[in-house]
Image 1: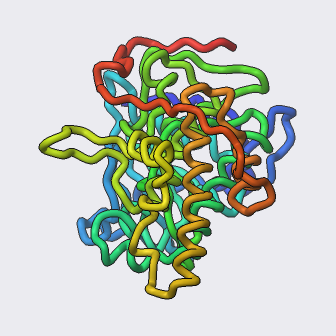
Image 2: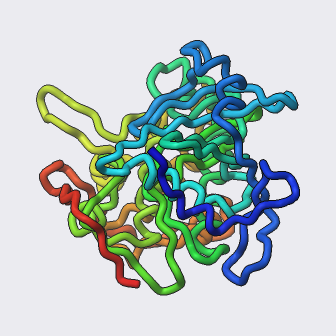
Length: 362
């Protein structure tokens, strides 16, 4: 069955029929080139999509490690296209639309794509250290290998990527699914924000109302989860949760037999109110040197205060990502800044689950 692919209308062919050049909204070239791969090329690159080359799997398909004929190592995402819902097709188009003009050192680089019949593949730079979730979460041994320098570098990198998406390019881009598994790490553990399948593009001064909320429980901002209202501050909220997760080393949502589900945002807020936020700093960061440990505790507390500012329930009180960067680098102090109550979604029943078509305000 032949399927249309409207997103490629924004590309033009070059003399090499396997290369497309993205066009900007004024008809000029954006300076970023994508290659149109054949399915056969990609199949050969990752040894027939063998299980030994699979490096990840998500709701919309699997990711394989491969080597192109020129020796370039790549990650190949093979999307599962559901013909009735067109879910994979939507995510495929969203990724290309978001990354066609976006170029930043902390964003994953998209090499090209494959469109053959119902097949949809995306080809990215290969990240040697997989994802932040894979390398950092879970075992104490993983957390122990992530010292303060690495954690700070990851948070600053993700913050810079989001500031770029939110404030430096137009249309602005809201990622919608910032979480540890969507932050990839290169060979030097530098972060690359990935997975733009849920991303939305916004012109200046617009917002989006969705009747189908997508994202990950624990990272979802309350206003988006409950009402479907999506703005750049929704990503700021998710970043704040990620920050608390990285500094504390604790899960975003924990289940306790006595207390049931416990949300990290709620726990951090409670400890902040009784001035015990320092107790939430991951003990794996502390190496036994009194002066160094005191410094790390103090800086960890400052970072978590930034995280709490990002997850405030009132969206207008959350800082912009460019301001977050200044807070994390110490250019803007968080001392004396009032932090108001955070919001979080404690019940899946509060999340809008309507799967009908979405409408926007623009």
